[in-house]
Amino acid sequence: MAMARQFSQEQLRVRPSSKEEAVVRSAQEHFERTLVRVRGELVGSVAALEHPRKSDAANYGEVFLRDNVPVMLYLLLQGRYEIVRNFLNTCLDLQSSTYQTRGIFPTSFVEENGSVLADYGQRSIGRITSVDASLWWPVLCWLYVQKSRDVEFGTSQRVQRGVQLLLDLVLHPTFEGTPVLFVPDCAFMIDRPMDVWGAPLEVEVLLYGCLRSCCQLMELAQKNALSRLLEQRLVLTREWLHELRRFLLKHYWVTSKTMQVLRRRPTEQYGDHQHENEFNVQPQVIPPWLQDWLENRGGYLIGNMRTGRPDFRFYSLGNSLACLFGILTAPQQRALFRLVLHNRQHLMAQMPMRICHPPMAMDEWADKTGSDPKNWPWSYHNGGHWPSLLWYLAGAVLIHEQRYPRADVLLMGQMRAMLEECYWSQLNQLPRQQWAEYFDGPTGTWVGQQARTYQTWTIVGFLLLHHLLRVEPQDVSLLNIGD
Image (cartoon, one colour):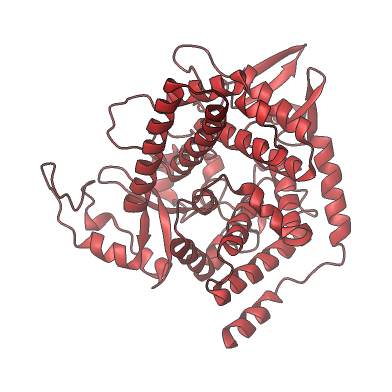
């Protein structure tokens, strides 16, 4: 009880606002303005509404698949299924058929002079294909089918062919023997060099969600038409799914106990039996900040596992999705929540929440980002704060409460109290700061130096947070991709 009272006193640092209804109404009006038409039909939202200079707008007026994830979920909660279906169909129309990229979905698309132009990475700054865009499509498709009960769409030849083309791509044999998907730098939300090449957490967690959703869609089709090829693909995908989760929990999940074991494992092990240190991780690469970060009962999934070079940075989106997709067990999810509470000054600060921690500083920043001025320490993807990430964590907390209502009530009460404070923090700040894309500095106080204003996923992320905390918490069940 004393701990609960202490936390309630801390919560008073951010005061509730009497303008809540007006802020929500204004955000809803902004959201409606983001919706655009392609071929005469509403298909989704542009990345951002307004730009100081037209020449500086770049591609923020296009429809990005990753940016439209929260948009589609919000539309599903509103029952506006037709727009979601139009979006999914447009992405299917643009699924690549060229030999090298056959099966991938576009990073973004836009209608110009009556034609729909798609970007598969050839126009991006790093010229890298957005892997996360393709992995999100089956997840959104399955959630749409579940919510709208449009089984006909899910079992259609068009959707099933799109699923098989994507599976042909991601399940294709490679030179790598592990069940992860290897990608280059810049291949997901972190779309500028940040030393995240290899098997970054966000991509692997999204791969798990993608495969799980593909299985659900294929099972729907299997009920309507028996097919030996479909059955074989289902078996293969389920096996891959099982191996991927086992791999992530074995090599990415860390606690104070597992770190102590890792530090004492033998290195330079040759052969194929009883490897204790499969990736030859030397104890010298384990950063000293982990000791306080993990405390005694905290845990999280590290950012990457590469031979001799694990990335121990904390990535907010990958860890939140691991809860939502059911990769982490219930006790592991609560260990993650304890870690967030213990490190809330880093992860939440003044503008929840930080995309990754800790940021790379100076020499490391210059070397690993190519001196990228946008990823200056404490900015953009290098430790910047992104308000659009908070609803993912809120969804993870609420869906955990829904699944395990009697588990560690004190901890979950603390998490709810923290989310309340973060909600009021965003409500008080974001309208004044014109719904900026990201925030700079150790406390996330300053609007990002190159941040776009009226960013769509900032606006709709707040609306999702408001819906889940204020309107209908039970709607978090929408985010459940299945058991």
